[in-house]
Length: 280
Length: 253
Image (cartoon, rainbow over all chains, first blue to last red; front, side):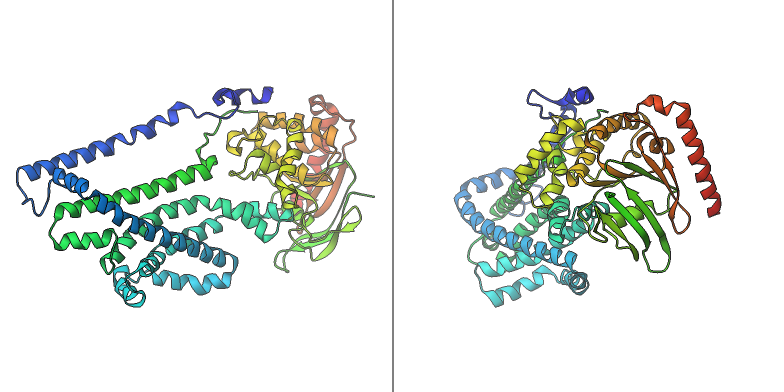
């Protein structure tokens, strides 16, 4: 069709759009510089250790850390499994609760007025201060960890989902109302999909909070998990293993964040589409 | 019987300051009636009342004789912006009113697919709105409006956000597609040329509070072409309407 002529510029044989290479290249190059910087830091660290500027029991060299990582790997893997299970369970519940609160406060103004200030105040309570209490109440098992993670993750989820819902365009809502849409249909077609972007940004924050939350609660009481391992190697002054576990915690967080990004790309395909400049 | 009848409608948002006072309008089957008036004169408010989004303090909205005052979901309404949902493909966007009415998604998509080519949107079913040009998006919004209700439509400045060339293109396309589908339409615009070119009648909404102050019948055969827009008769309509608009504007000061 004549009107669609210029549109096909970016379309392949299947008619689906292919993005111009220009928009892909900068993203690939974006990885180079942080990696170069990281390598430089590790090299500098190795130099400091080799030159014995800092005693090796205080700052083990990267080579030693790597060696510890390899030798302790089976143990680290076992502890990681526990931490990941705690993080995932707490995260799932925290996200669900946060989502529920956001829906409730968006739907009922009374709920918003009654709950929102309290939720904000609840965030001023330091996590480290309540963790021992949770251990006292819920013991050394999975439960106190999950509860702590729920406490740290539901807040960012609630706040960003709520603002996502509230950003829904009133004219679009009017349009759907004019179609005879019910409140639930407006939520289903406008508010919820419109807030997906906020959901994923919040989820990325929640993932790192969840892992850190799990480790902190393991420090304060537990039998297994990366936090427990960490307190053990710390009391043994095995700083190489200490660094090894820090690396593992980072990697776990990064993997979980990567999963979130993948899910986002899959569930929000429209955000990765290049706008065409064709005119009718 | 008229498709749509607006009888003695008065409306105010706060119960004190009247925006509309005793508005009377009719729309016959297959007719296009433009509502022309100064901005802030209550045109969009009038549409929100006809669409059932706002309930008038007095008066009635009748669709084929049935009272639908304050009841949304019967007359299709298109706003100035396309309001296509960025996260839905074109087929899902245009079939949204059918899905809201309870039609199965697959069935609704099939209905949309039949009509896409008529709206110059062949091959865009699986595209997202961001992939379409301004004119195409506006046509998709029009198709959604049409799928919403084939009975009567309210179009609020549907072409005003487009650039001049695209707008002329859309007028040409709209005139031809209207020949086929004959959708009974109320059309808000502030563009006199557009009103004369497209309409069977042009109604002027004026005064404070707003009411219908004048009506012009554009007694021209269809299909209309751009030649009409350059004719002496076109200019004569324009002279009459402009004079009346000036008169109404002078009243406001």
